[in-house]
Every structure is written in C-alpha cells, then in structure tokens.
Length: 371
Image 1: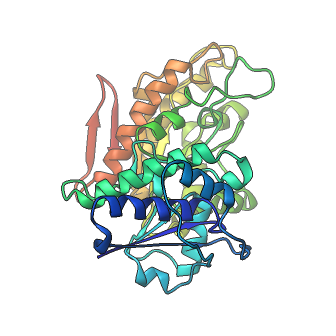
Image 2: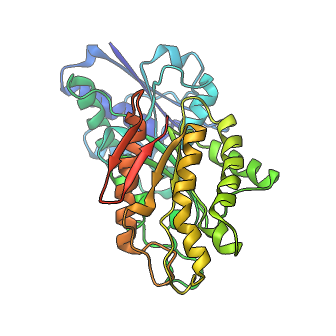
Image 3: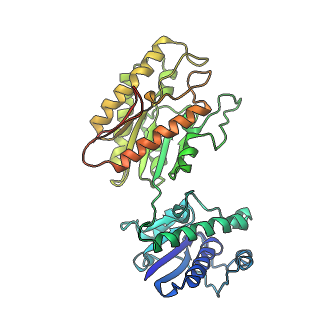
C-alpha cells in the first residue's frame, strides 16, 4: 500500500481538494485498496476551520464527491506513517520540515513536482481563484498517480536552486527608468523554471559581494532561509564597477571570504555553484579599459577559487551572452543564452560522479565542476 499525505496551510482548500480528487482517481482506476490518502494543515497559526464551501463546490462541479472532512493539524508521527508528504507551496514544506524535524528520508515534495511545470499552487483563500487552483491540483494528482503506477517513471524530483546574484539575476531591464525588470518569460531564472528547475530568485539590483561581517551574516541567513539542492552565486560585476582600480584578484579574495562563511553553514546535502559573470564590454555604463580587462580576468581567478574551495564552477564569460547598450546587462537573447548555460552547469553539478565533470559549449566555452 502506498500512503499519500497532502498538506497545505489550513487544510481547508488545497490539501483536501487534492485528497478527494486523488481518492476519486484511484477509485475509478480500481486501485482503492492500494492507496491510503489523507491531508492536514501545517501552518503554525492554522485554526480549526471547516472545509471551504467554495472548494467543495469546485470539486462537485467536476464530478468529485466529497465525504465529510475533519480538519486536522499535521503531527510529527505523520512522517513515519506516510510514504509521500506533499505540500502545495514552499511555505508548506518549510512548516512540514519544522514539524517533522527535517526530511531525512526525502519523502517531501511539492504537488506540481509531478508535472511538466514545477512550482507552487496558489492559495485560493487569498486569491479567490479556485478554478486555477483546481487545474493545478488536477494536473499534479494525475502526474502523481501516473508516476506511482508506472514503474518506468518513478516520482520525479524537481531540483531546487537558490540563485544569489545582482541585477542580471534579478532580471533588470536597462530600458526602464525605475529599476523594473524584464517580463517573467524573458528572465533566465524563469526560463530555467520552465525546464523543470525549482528556482528561487534572490537577485537584487546593485548587489556586490558581501564583505562586512554584518553583510555576510545577512546574506547567509537569506540564502539559507530557503532549503535547496544548489546555491548558485553570480557576483563580481558591481564590485569592479563600484571600485575603480579594483583587480580581479582582490575581488576574488572578497568572494573567498564570503563563500568560506557560507560553506561553513551550508547543509551537507546542498551544493555550491560559483559562476563567473559574462565579461563586460564597452557601453554606456563602462568605458574604462581597466575595468573591462579585470572583468575578463575574473573567470580564471574564480576558477582557481572554486578548485581551492572544492565547489562547482561555471564560466559564463564563454557562453556568448549578449549584452545591451550599457555593456553590463543581459539582452533578451542574452537571458536565453545564460539560461541554457546554467541549465547545463546545474545538471552537470548534480549528476557529477567522483571525477570532475567538464562540458564544452563552444570554441572557448566550458563549465567545470571542481571536486
């Protein structure tokens, strides 16, 4: 018997919708005796409300019968009782890990991990959009059942990546007047999400390498607040721009100080990928020949640092990323190129064996994992 446990914040909308829809699916497939399905609330402030009438109505409209539902909170013992514990969003998973003391047996997933578009399912109690929530739950449950009943397709894991970077990670649109960013479908982080990665965009306009103790502490806390499989750090451009005369070697020493602290705190299950940003080119933001030269030297310095620290390394300067008129920020096509490079770099890092991994991507381009 396979035991499935759905979890959302209050157990009034999303998780009971998933519970009753999956029960309906297995009944129609003649698999009732092979599954045990339940749901609960994980949010610490969850009250003992009732199963949402709006959620019941949307299920009824799609032919799903709802038995009497008793709202309950998740308990630590649920971790040993169930085979898969499935949340609807990352806040759910965070609460689930808190309640269970972690996820040592890798049982926790998001429901949309079982679809071709991993991500979070919005809470209709806030959005009022029960129809779209239903569509997401329907897709997730169908994918889940297919994965569990098809031995050739085990449950899929969406790798989680925290992207810690500057305006090019944020997705800044240099045409904007007030720091706006490109539309979601253009940004490289969103393009990676479409390829099946769980991406957490922690890019900020103007960010430089954290150097002061307080800056490093804040950055580490922000990065580690999100459980991940990989932390990808892409910084250095602003340091060169903000400190004329700064060399690539000094910039790398700042990065070493920051990463050394981060590595000390990084859980052993999480990997680190240091990415050298694309070298700047002459443009509206940069004309200084010294800055341009140091930006070209930075990748080799970062490569040596990655080797020294034993972390993954990706050289985006060799990917042919197109920049805009300012010589610093990615163009729309540049975001597509960077996404393709990061996809291969992340895949290689997570699929590495005991030997270093190297992938050529062009005449002068390479991505290496240092081990």
